[in-house]
Amino acid sequence: MKHLKLAALISGAMLAMTATAHAKTDMTFGGYIKADVMFSDYGNGAPDSGSLSRQFYVPGTIYGEKGNGKQVVDFQARESRFNFKTVTDLEGGHSLTGFIELDFMTHTDGNERVSNSYSPRIRHAFVTYDNWTVGQTWTTFQNPGALPENLDFVGAADGTPFVRQALIKYTSGNFQIALENPETTLTPHTGGARITSGSGVVPDVIARYNFSQEGGAAYSLAGILRQLNVEELQGTTQLDSTDLGYGVSFAGVIPVGKDDFKFTATYGEGLGRYMALNYANAGVLDSNNEIQTITSYGGFVAYRHWWSEQWRSSFTLSGFSADNDVNLTGGSVNKEAYSGYVNLLYSPSKPLTFGVEYMHALNEREDGVDGDLNRIMFSAKYVL
Image (cartoon, rainbow, N blue to C red):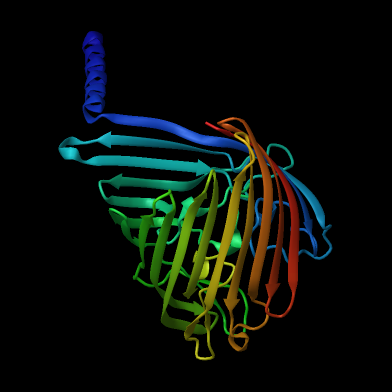
């Protein structure tokens, strides 16, 4: 009996290996280890330890905490990440890809008292079969290839679309079209706590076209249509309203010799969470509790210069503005956000990079209250 069990185990293992070999599956493990040290000066007082803007710059979180000191230092290795990818060539010329990636950002379940232990979170988890992609990854509205090489986690948070979410996407050559997870963020009439609504059954529809020119320049043009929807009880008031949001985004990477110039420009009505990490909401409720979209626009420019084979710098300017109707939103809503970055990076070998970066950010609300942040950041990164 024991011999029969052993034979069965060996046969099963051989069959599994034969199936894997027949399918021609390549498996790769990747990611990087990154350690950051951030010296920050908040003009109105630093957020509490563990707050999101102590991990990376988030527009709208730097207005300050009264009574807190202005200058703080934070050490972290949260941005470290790991991923696993499989690529399988199937019979009939079909291709199957699976990808999952985790990091440790945004969580508040750890602390800095003893162990600095933080739970992993899903960044990407998707499957691609031929032209179809299903799962969570970058929104089709964003071109991640145009993001600048900054040490800050996002890098140009005010001026770029930045969303990862579940989607169903079809790609044909340079053209992509996707149905993506809908989520509406609204400002109550005359202001108040953000209303986040997952109501409605209409997914966000996004299309993008990628194109290039001789010399290596690459561009993308994306458009979005989305339904803003709220159906819920707020106190004793039943909210039930819809409106249409839309937007366009143009991004690109232009080689300049060995250097490169990157940019993104975005405009829309009802974009909300798609821009500047939801610095402004997609809409506001009027006196009849009907949704009115909020117009917003933003962008960034970044120039990366190579001083030598091992030394390089990026210079980035980023900005965002929301056109709020203060008669509806009140004055305590976010109006404008700007940030600038300059860094110096050194790679003694290809997988290893040391860097220092200075950033300045300024946020302003409609009532004139503003917040500013100056930060010097040191990082070490090892790509696995």
